[in-house]
Amino acid sequence: MGCRMATLACLVLLGSSLGGCATRSVRSPVIDRFGIQVDLVRQVSGFTTQTRGFEHPTIISVRRMTHILNAIEVETHNEGGGTIRQPAFHPDIVARTAQAMVEALAKAGPDQEIGVQAIRKEMRLGVFHRKYLTSCLAYVDDGNLYLLLRRVDWLIPRKKEGDRLPKPRRNERPMDFRVVGGDHIFYAGPQTLEIDWQNSVFKTAYSLPGSTRGTKRHREVIDRSTIPIDEQEAAIAGENRVAIDELSPEQLRALADLEEDRRQGLITEPAYQRAKRQLLRRR
Image (cartoon, rainbow, N blue to C red):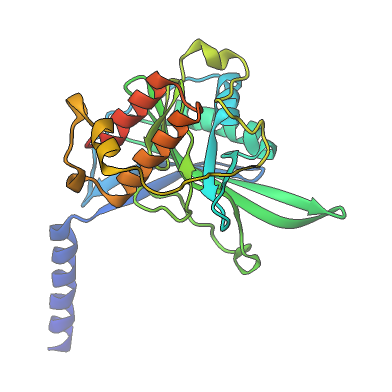
C-alpha cells in the first residue's frame, strides 16, 4: 500500500510539472576564464525551447565591441539629490569582456542569448582587497545589439566570495540604476540599450554627450520631480500617444529623465525621439 501511494505521488508531481509548463532558463557555459563567465541561455517551456529568432551566430570584431562597451554609461541617484554617472563596464574589465562576448555571440544559436558575468578585483597594498561584479544579457536582433544590464560594479559581499555568483536574469533588476542613451546607443528601457553596432562610428573610440571618459562623475540635478502632466501628454503625442494612466510609474520616471536630458542638451533630438518610442513600445 505504501509503495503504491508513493508511486501515485510521483505520478502526480510529474503530471503537475508537465502540465504547468513553467518557463525556465537553461544555461550552457561556454567561457570561464580570467574572471569572465559566459553562458548561452535559452528559455524552455516544459521540454520545448522557445523560438526567439535572434540573428545568431553573429560575428563582431573585438575592436568594435571594445568601443561599444567603453561608450556605455549608467546613472544612479545619490542621497543628496544629485546623480552619479559612471561607466557600465569598468575600464579594467572592458577588454576581457569584449573578447568573451564576441566569442559567445559567434557560438550562440538563434534561440539563445548570452549571459555575461565579469569580475573586477581591486588591489590595495599589493593584495586583492575587494571584488566587483558586472553582469548582463545580450543578443542581436533586427540588426541591433541589445544589452540588458543587471549589475554594474556590484561589490561582492565577502561572505559570498566563495559562493556561486548571481546570474543575470531577464525579469530581475537587482540594482537601481538607469542606462544613458544617445545617438547609436538608444534607450530601450530603464536598464536596456538598443545599439546600432554596425554603425561606422564604432570603428574608433566613441562616447556619448557628457561622457565621464571612464570615471565616475557627480552631476547635480536642480529638480528631480516628475514633469507636469501636460508635458508628459505632449511627449507622447502623435503616433505613440498613450493615456497617462496606462503608463507605469517606471515609465513616467523614465520619460521625466529623458526630458531632463533633452533640456540639458545631453541627448540629441533624434535620439530623444527614438528613446521615447522605445520606452512606449509594447513588447
